[in-house]
Length: 310
Image 1 (cartoon, rainbow, N blue to C red):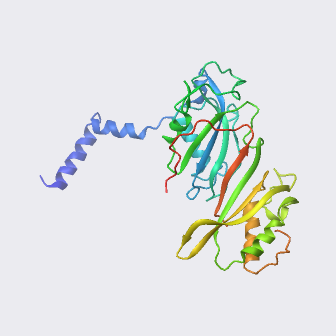
Image 2 (tube, rainbow, N blue to C red):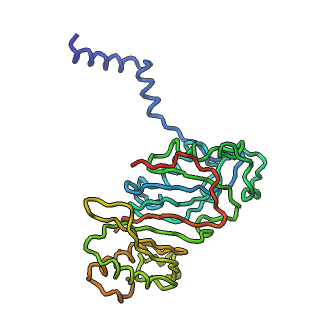
Image 3 (cartoon, helix red, strand yellow):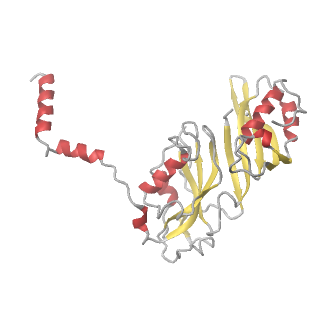
């Protein structure tokens, strides 16, 4: 039979035979059932911190609260639900994050903390012992515990990776327990006076009122004083057609909303001769959270699968 007639005949038969395997498969693929995290309450759980790295190019920032998809956070929670690691809602899992990154920003040292399902039954509901020594490791993995890194990376997009995890005490907060945060801003050094930019950048070091260098958030922010610990401009190990890549590295205890990009924008104006280095430091997104430093968070369970998709 001609192909066109045979295709039409096949479609008619498919419509008539609603019990066929073909129609059954179609119905099955449309079903994407979730699961209620509350029905997992009988499982043991422990409070852990996860170290996350990601390329932010295709994401609308880290937080899913902006109602813009995809976000890093929404992808992580999809993976947690798919792997059945979540027990309870967001309040019950005591979720915290080190910070929120904006659209296009990448991170190599983002940290989140939350309660996850565990195989170790000797950990009580309050997770009192989670900050103590991890059980004896076998091939880099605590004996008997879920391999959170492998399990989550198996379902996460290739541009998001869990690079390590660590048990932490129940009073740990990924946001407030953080001792310092470091940002790197990458740029090409063409037609910029880098020495003048570095001189101006050194004026940022110390504790200052940075209200002129941020996006105002009067509802949530009550003080605009922040402490910049260090500032440095250095060349990277990358050149392209004679152009040198540089990085501005800024380290601080905490930052305001858009503070880093605002400071960098003014530094670019200074580097182009449009502003004096003496201008009161008043921004683009090639920014990256390089690392976050914690006293209690020392990831023990790293796997070789830590590379991101290029």
